[in-house]
Amino acid sequence: MRGVLVAASVALVVSLLGTPWVIRFFRRQGYGQEIREDGPSTHLKKRGTPTMGGTVIVTATLIGYFVTHLVTGAGFTASGLLVLMVMTGLGGVGFLDDYIKIRKQRSLGLTARTKFAGQAAVALAFGLLAVRFKNANGLLPGSTFISVIRDTDISIGIIGFPLLAWMIIAATSNAVNLTDGLDGLAAGTSAMVFGAYVVISFWQFGNLCEPGHLEAGCYLVRDPLDVALVAASAMGACFGFLWWNASPAKIFMGDTGSLALGGAFASIAIVSRTELLLFVLGGLFVIETVSVIVQVAGFKLTRKRVFNMAPIHHHFELADWPETTVIIRFWIVSGLAVAFGLGLFYAEFLSHGGSL
Image 1 (spheres, helix red, strand yellow):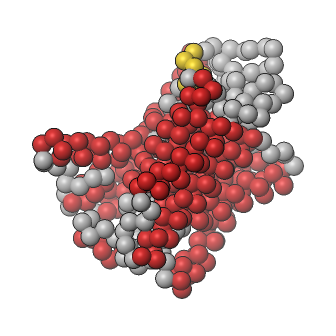
Image 2: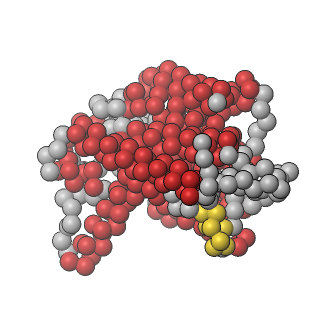
């Protein structure tokens, strides 16, 4: 528990104190956000706000994680390092996307094909590496069995696993990217989901299966405590960034942050064997993504828009909801999704005979 507290605290302080410096630096460099012309008119005043703030979130997460290991003396693990690899790798893809937007003064950066290729490269690398590095108990960071709250009996094989990892990572990173459209919306929601994974991973650590002795409700996962440290660092980093990203935002996370956060969620879900539970915990991200799919499909079929604008948070803005009202109500939806997901996690533990 001490390590979790250190990780969250260090990342929080680094993000909270480091973001103002980054804001000043990006302003001097002219790294301002471009705004979509077809978006809500209230967003036009945000043009020029520094972007690429995701660099702070990623850096604070890394510092929180590594400082914790120095303080506690604990060794690094394959699971923790693989999650950080995905987070940093997708953050790099997002950074290139943001940088191109700034340099070319437009709201579009990398081409869809190039961004897709970058996400695929990072995700497939994770998928290939996650089925290596077996520990002393024979456990791997990833599993070839599809998981809900723990592994099911459905195997996708050594070839199917990298493809599944790619699908989950790409879907989640794009979902967070779609959600990042209002001040503090993605950062606040992400902090909640990371907080849930701190609880889940630490609970798994306290109920690990002993080699050769499977107790009721115990978990067959590798490195849950180290995964909890990553989640705690990311949570602290998001909270520190949110202080400056809350409305009216002084800085945006950009694709640098949204892709990195989505990659972190997906990879944590995979190594903690909670792949499908992620879709409950990240319920708001799912709603945002589905709204875009419904909007596009509905328009192609009927030539009419289902929503005023997609993602759905813009629909409510165009329905004259104040931005802060949309954000707070969407945070409430996210909090309910996280609470429901944690409830499912604990109920499943009890159903397997577990107890406090």
